[in-house]
Length: 468
Ligand SMILES: *Cc1c(COP(=O)(O)O)cnc(C)c1O
Image (tube, rainbow, N blue to C red):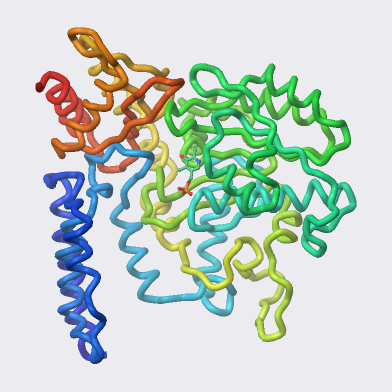
């Protein structure tokens, strides 16, 4: 215990040094796996080592190898960094080491979740009575929401899936868009709903599900079949949105059908009046999955599941009462009832800190700034010969394709430019294949990315384009 203050102060110093290095360091970090293994995978000592030595070692090795995704020049995947207040609250979360399963095991953790849940329901414009669960990420949010969906659609068919499982249950029809994120399929896989038996509805050139094709798919589903339809708010490549109001309208023709929305980052469009048209009608769905660790910029692991029908949600998630559990009186929130975990981290604290520091307008500005920067990058890139923007930049995602000046294979050339940019290290981003074409993906999701960073990024891309 005596070494606590010194070790923790030193660790804070090391953490601050790392954060200070972010704006200038090479984004990709040290990547040599053999070197990392040699340094990290040692023989475990019999006696144990000094904590200070271990932490210094980790800070050096781990810090050097760390990808600077918390920094302003990381444009890969859809990532987001950590707001300082959220990071600080995350430190406290580990320090307090609460078990956010039961109210009695961490009362503040439980009540902070109530604050976070109600604030976000309000910010997103979801039904005020919706229930919520704080999970590790959007994939587990899908799992949670789709478990509630499975519960509700089978309950309507007088089948108790919680007690009896799926053996002998009526078949559930599942419809997803052709551009659904893989994690939706993974959640279906975990839930025994099968990822290969879904009905797939075609999407357009921007990745938006076609409402006409959805109407056709619905016609093929027997009228009284239990039915789950998965929509998407924010395509991981283009940032595009399914036609949400129209699609939900079509599904509502089927009594008892459930609509789930993947809004991993796109749900955040709801906080901005300028972007809210993209999620028009979103509150009419039955469940919503999103992330706080992406666009809200809190540390990993932080996903959010919202369900319009709290009883379906709790029926799907709450454990059978174990005798030793001390359940609080009705008015206290026991988190185990809403998530697939039992003991877990009190991940509400960083979200709480982020939302309180940003305030309503701060959240709005964070989202709008990222979108404005994405548009700026697309506009600056587009003016150059051999550069084509493949998507309508409606949110924070940009897809870029490059054609070689002397003609030839644009796919190979685009991949080569991505490789050069990654190697250059000024920024980091990755590639994708969009409708059969190789493309560079730019995602602007970090609170600390400025217009100047965006200009540096575009310069780096153009430099790599003209280098031989
Ligand atoms: C990132 C993402 C997911 C998965 O979220 P995790 O937090 O990584 O589990 C799901 N859907 C979309 C659209 C995403 O962008």
